[in-house]
Image (cartoon, rainbow, N blue to C red):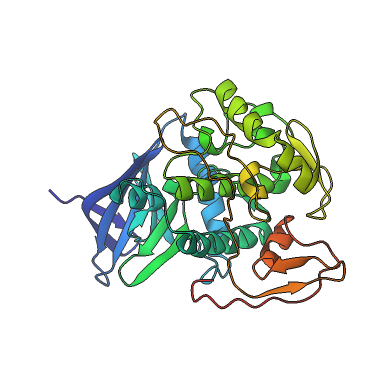
Length: 338
């Protein structure tokens, strides 16, 4: 039986539940006023969820007041409520990256498709940084494929329930943010953090698309730290980025100082030998000897210091990961989804 949801002058007919999460469910709905299919996120009102609901309403409202059409962020339509639920109306998207991996038997994704997806997520993170927003829950389930038949591997970032305004939060102890497999060392250790925690998560997502299984599948926070340590203290990583401590790296190569950066994010820039990574508990193969996750576009440029950089690194530089300041050339972006 179809449930009717009413906002100001609009009626939504629920058709099917397309997703469930900790704080609610998402239904596919038909909007009677124009016949458009939309996604309606339904969140039950109670004392425990009120703050989370208010936070998501604030963040989605901030996003709706700016132009995000070219930023690969889900389009927000409206919000309304009744006596028991809050409702957020978004554009309807097809499936998330986890579902896409599952449909393909968790087989590794082709490098060219990982490049396409990653380029789009970077665009979304650039827009969020412009708005001083930290997503804080970047994972395969929160990256949606728009329409895989009509626009293969075109994706958008969703779910701002855990997002934060940068100047409002610097560290979190409880409750934890970020899903465990994608949780950055700053969050694990209760350290001050910034938008770069989303870059850690992006690196983990990239690796998962390549492997078909999570890079750091820790059963607990301690196990998570063990996985991370096993990939970030290898001699090859020292050779690439100069000086690496337990979680922090002074990255001469990237032109950064005292930035936290992960093994998967380091793979954005170099061929890293991670072959020592212990076998995953599910028997899936470990990372190959040379992982070349990204040269998103064949175009590139050389900077004054003589270093060659692939074209897509201009966005990474804006996020704090990328060419040093001396790299002033403007790269080209040729992919239709970028």
